[in-house]
Length: 162
Length: 256
Image: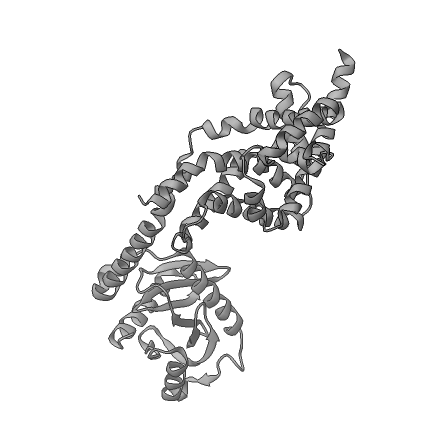
């Protein structure tokens, strides 16, 4: 196997993590990763060095955005999979963060996850999204404010019960 | 004025949280946070978001990677599949073209069968009831009919002689077929019983005869030398077979 494919293979776990957080659905996330890998393999010859990691995140982010655009033309279907009231502790917190992510606009969710979960630099995220760094920073700030409010809004009633 | 006197901006706070702030400014931010509890609390809440994200999704990267995401598998199977598909097609082509009768058992796609019998049964039903205009070119212009149809369908059309079964050629017409134009020939017995023969280019080279029926009409489909034939008539299978046999023997001799 070529070095290119070795490097790609090494990236799969991280791509799955990003896709899972991006979509919050296991199968859909792996579909996205699979499409990303297929697309990248097809363009193997076109990849002339550069940052493979950023490139793969770029493909996945773009595929997800296209998917969301297609969905947007269809009647809205809200996923209820991660929403439940019976859990507690870490599990409930996990659901809280998933629910908070779900309410974010696409670009903000991508920035938040690329920076906070995947550890990309602002510059790398700017490349992934094809926007200036200033835009990345303002998206990140809005995303953090939004998620913070969502998490606190959800936790407040629980604290009141104690 | 030194950096430590410049107020810390929101952008700087984020950059500090994400390790993007230049080293020389970090000390300033830390001193700022010590005296600005609101900003310190905000920074803490962002860290909590990061912790929650890692707690919720971090372990996904530790899961075993599903087989369908294997690079080896994604990179290779298409080629293997295309290769074998080409080989299979080539084999079918060689067997069909070179082995004649042996290929009569070759598989026929259900759609070819359905397309041909569907079109033929429809045409049969539409035209056998026509008394005055059942055909475009009458049977007494046999040579002209065969020449015209052959030119339009792209293979030699010879209207079979079915006198042995009591059927006389009424004539023929050109029709749209499943994949290409179709030649449609009509025959009639002294008692008014009508048979039609529908032929058109088929993707299937050669097949066994297969029977289909719709309402009061029965049809026999077969393919030979890349041409599909449907003989339609009454649902009496023996009678259909008898006529089909005669059609088949003559088209084979005619070279298809």
